[in-house]
Image (cartoon, rainbow, N blue to C red; front, side, top):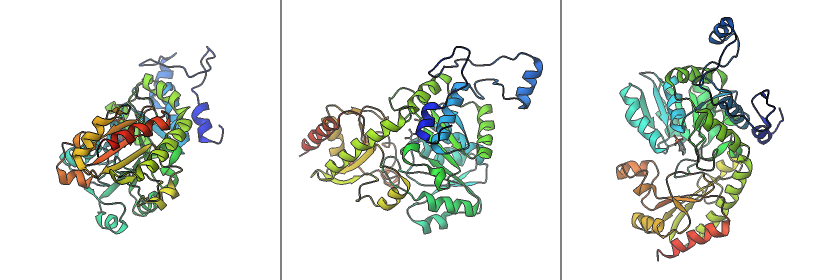
Length: 390
Ligand SMILES: *Cc1c(COP(=O)(O)O)cnc(C)c1O
């Protein structure tokens, strides 16, 4: 295969069928048939690689997996119905009663719920540490720490953590290093290059990029993915072939889309930095970002999300949202359409105020997922909604 991951994301394809198709075919079949009983026996014994059943593997799903592996520089992967199924599957495959998982507190809302509510029920300990502070992380490790989990950049606070340092720590202590790379995408950051063992994506976001289907994937070391595969083939969170077909086509344009998302996000972040209604702007590759040097070291560009804190707090947040004329109010992100959200009054409204602050959500925080519309129109809409706050 060609060297460049971008090329592989376009050119990797399931073996051609007898129909000589050029674009990728959709294998919308739940099971696969065998010529002989021996073939079937061999498939179950894994002495041949005949497809069996789409809960295990499906050629269209495999094509999507192969492309993401090429992009992330991963050995193998397993695709799931949603990003949360990938997160949950990666936890449940490796964590047993008595184990400890150490996570950054700033994780996707449902991940926070799994970590703090459900894992305890099965006797798995979870604690949070601030991964910007190495001493705090080292002090939080326990003899039974099995996994370190984090997102970088985080949702929605855009904290950036040093993958290289944490990767080294995990190797030394024999801990599984699991990274949710959804916000960066493999085009902007490849955690495996810095020592991650597992990399997770909600493919629903930038990978689909057009707000159509849900999907998730875990990629990483072959022997770890083998365990995830065995867990998932029995428990059933597998990706639908139809969604895999949509997502595989989407990966062909991920590079060009991400470049434009980044162009637009950088321009919006620069405009916001000067605005009088705004207390602070967060964007990983703005020199004002607290982890700017780390972002420069591990990310090619800053990504498509910009967040900012309004002087006027929660009230201003709601007013800003109502003042938007073009940007969509929706909880998704990573779409061609620019989207605004106010986490304190929506996705994180059920948390206690102290809990919200712990996960990085201040009352006037606005998150913009910067789309592919003309940048002048995006800036004009945000500007007029900010100006109306005066
Ligand atoms: C959306 C998201 C998820 C969950 O993915 P779904 O596809 O919605 O299940 C996990 N992590 C991050 C960072 C996300 O943005």
